[in-house]
Image: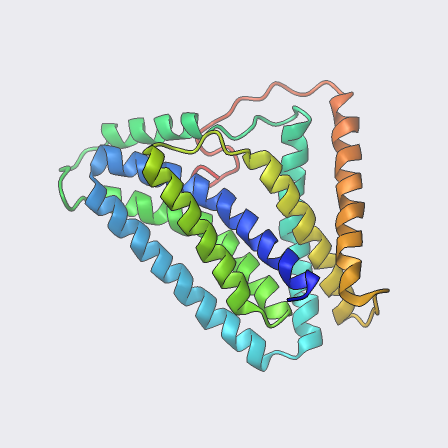
Length: 258
């Protein structure tokens, strides 16, 4: 297994862990307030749809899109995703943006569900919809990452396995502790994954454009080091500036508690 494949799997695993933790909060809120059967069914349905999307989009990309065009497309997509994650992580680490609070998100979601009308029971439409929407929306970024990284290196199976492993780990821990995982260092993980995605994005964009990186795949760890240094410098610089007052809401990043 090459170093690029190992880094790919770590990036997918980390990204999926973050999104799975956030989705778990929504599922727990739905299950405790509207019923576990509906929440479980909504979660399972969303995971099936996400899995189908990976197969339906990822496999054709690998087999039918020219490799150079695919790498340019993948590189651009990963760059956008990675820089977006890094921007939020830098702002949070420097105090310019409120950090993600799973406890606050859980309480707000649960309060909203309790206040909603409708019959609570073994099959609850609202509980199903909230769980499905939460898992699906949080999972879409992971799907994009799995497809992008997997297709660019023809390692869709490895990327999918890393994502599945993250879901199993987070679900198992959540089941054992029976609560939202507010202790997980989400911002740290997002920072690391953002650096990895941005590095992969630049690497594949260059590959698709005809750049021959010194050392081939060994250039990826070097790019990771460069972006890590830039990220650390950015956090240090922003910490010297007075942050604007920040208040965390249930959906701080837009969407459903992302």
